[in-house]
Image (cartoon, rainbow, N blue to C red; front, side):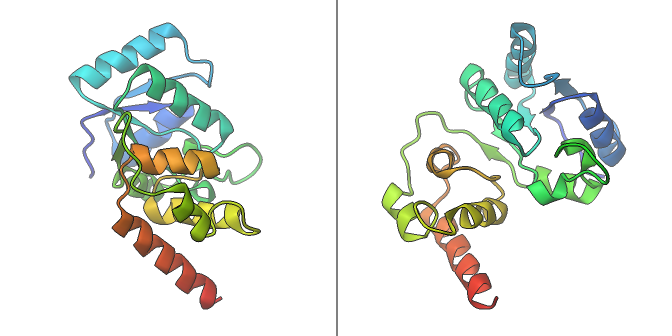
Length: 188
């Protein structure tokens, strides 16, 4: 069984329950939604200083808002991203960590990215444009697939540029993902 020494920051009790089902004993901090209070941010700061923190939020707008709030308050946290298609509920409801399979959670936690605050971009806006990730008719779908291939989650064009810089995604990693994506599209 996979052992995780860091504290996992999740949105709620159901996320904690799912992670405990998948990994056994695991420590979480629950944000209880996107309106994170000062006390929760203080817990995250303390955990970051003592054990490290992995942010694992739902792959949706509120989850992204939580990531940004935490990143501003606690620079240098580590992130794990769950692909949208791995967080779909069986019945009704919204996307969520609580709907992910143990295999999907394990895969997400095997691809961790630690933010490098104020990092210089390695990938330019021109690179994103040339790769069809911004400004093109299929840019959204290509960004979504790139996020899956790099394990950095979906982002709009502006967020993608920042995320690639924050996580110091190399030109080689970026290039390999673009080649794979182009090959997939060519093979239909």
